Length: 281
Image 1 (cartoon, helix red, strand yellow):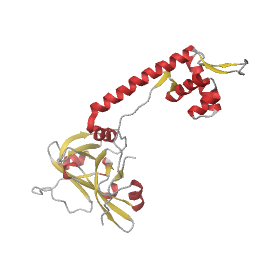
Image 2 (cartoon, helix red, strand yellow; image 1 turned 120 degrees about the horizontal axis):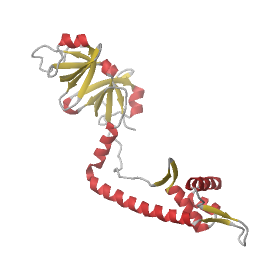
Image 3 (cartoon, helix red, strand yellow; image 1 turned 135 degrees about the horizontal axis):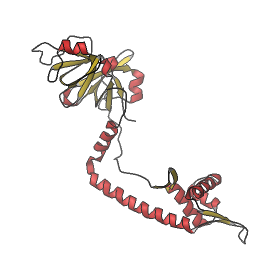
Image 4 (cartoon, helix red, strand yellow; image 1 turned 90 degrees about the horizontal axis):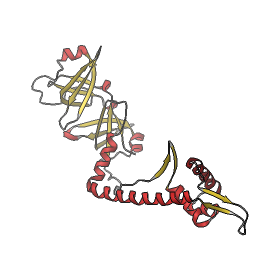
């Protein structure tokens, strides 16, 4: 049985960012603290300023003390006595800091607008790719594709992931995992396979890429791209149609027995239970 649910609607991606000041390794403040300084300057009251920016009185004074310490000079000073019973005020240094921050922030907004216009309609696709290539895992083999089918079993589901070049990877996972990952036909996902889980075979002449009679669900036919020998084992990488590469770890003896060398044809075989599926949060 297949499950066919459309992806939930997504808002268009846009560039965003923020500006903050640093003193050495310490952060002096960003928009929130500058807004607090500005509110103090406008109201002359730490209580009113705290309410204006939505923080507690204690939180406001903690932020002020931190800024004073990091700046190396007072930015906010307490006034005592007088007809109004005292209050708080900004030093000339704080006023200058606010003006500088607002000038930088204006330029930052202009930069984001120009960058967004330059990126154009391809931004969503490019940003998605940047996120994918930034994933770090211990699994040597990482593939990206879209779910093409989900077959329900008694306990587990069999999920098929369609890859570029006409390849497909089948994974077996529990119903709970399918639901937790939000897997449905059309959903983008990535598959992880450790190199030590991949077995290499050399098919007979004239096999034409036909599936071999094996219990392993996944069989990817390719051409040997590289063989990197170690003391005992070797890393063998197969190039697949569409540009993907899958790597296996086999013994040096197996490399010799199978005649694995650059340009040779081989089949990468691995069980569906050896495939880990993941999605972007």
